[in-house]
Image (tube, helix red, strand yellow):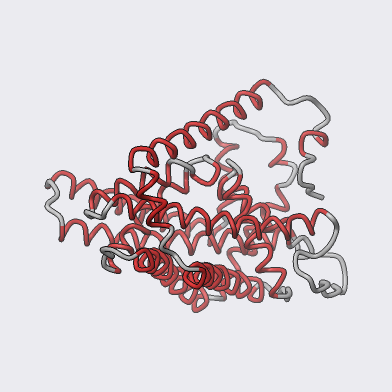
Amino acid sequence: MFRLGRVGRESGGAPSSGSKAGTLVLRLIGWAGVALFVYLIVRTGPREILRAIGRLSLLEVAALMGLRFLYWLIRAVNWRALLVASGERVPFGHILGARVAGYAVSYLTPAGNLGGETVRIFCLDRVGRNKCLATVVVDKTVEFLAGLATVALSVVFLITEFALPRRQKIELFAAIAVLVLLLVFLILKQRQGLFGWGLDTLRKLKIRIPFLENRRDKILETDAHISDFYGRNPRLFLALFASYFAQAWLWAAEIYFTFRFLGGETPTFFKCFLIVTLGSFYSFLPVPGSVGVYELTYVSLFALLRIEMSSGMAVILIRRVVGLIWAGIGVVPLMRKRAGAPVSGSPPPERPGPS
C-alpha cells in the first residue's frame, strides 16, 4: 500500500544521481520563483501594497474565505458524482477532505497537480485503487475541457477588443485549434483505452517499462472503468463540464470582490474573468505554489488590461494568504490519514468485502 514519505526506503537503495539532479533542479526553480516574487513586490512598492491590504476588514476576509470554500465544495460534489456513477458510496466529508488535501500537496510541493491527484487517491484508499484513479482521470479531463472552453472565450474577446497584430491573432487561433484537437484525441482514446494504448505504443517503439508491464492487468482495468463511464453517463459528463465552466466565473468573482474590498478603481467582471483564464497556465510549472510565476503572469495581465499595479499586487498577496490558509487546512486530513484515521471526523462505512 502507498505510504507518504516511504518511497525512498521501500525502493531498497540510496537515491540515484538522476534523482539528486532532479531534486536540485526543482529546488533551483523554487528559489528562482521566490526571488522573482520578492523582485515584483520591491518593484511595485511594499508600502503601497501593504496600505492597500490594510483596507480589508475581517468580514471581507471571511467573505473571500467563503467564496474559496464554495469553490472546494463544488469540486467535491463533482468528484462525488463520479464516484457514485462508478458504484461507490463515500461519505462527503471524506471526499471534501481528500480534495483539499490534494490541493495542499499541489500548492506546497513541486509535485504540482500530479502529486495532488495522487494524494486524492491515497486519501480514499477504501475505494478500489483502479476505480478511484478512473474517476480522477475523467474528472481532470472534464476540468481541462471546460478550462479550454474558457480560454477560447477569452482569446476571442482579446482578438475582438484589442488591436493585436494579424499574425498574433492567427497564432492564438492556431493554438486553440491544436488544443481542441488534442483534447478530442484524448477523449476518443479514453473511450477505447488510453493507458492500454500507451503501453502498446511503447511496445511498438521497443520501450519496456517493467513497473508498468507488471501492472498491465490493473492498467487495463482502469481503462475499462473510464470507458464504462463515457458509455453510460453522457448527461453527467455535460453536467460536470457546465460545473467546471461555472467555477471559472466563481474564481473571477473572488478576484472582482477582492478589488472591490480594496477600494479604488475596480476592473470589470469580465476583465477579472480574463485574468483567471489567461493566467491559469502558471499552474503547469513545477514550482511550489507557482511562487513568482503566478505573480509574473498576473502582473503581465494587469499591464495588458491597464489595471493599477499596486492594487493588483495587493490582490495577488491576499489570494496568496487565502491559498496558504486552505493549504494549511488541507494538511489536516493528510495528518489524520498518516495517523490511520479517516480524512474527516466521521468513521468510514464498512465495506462488504475486499475491493
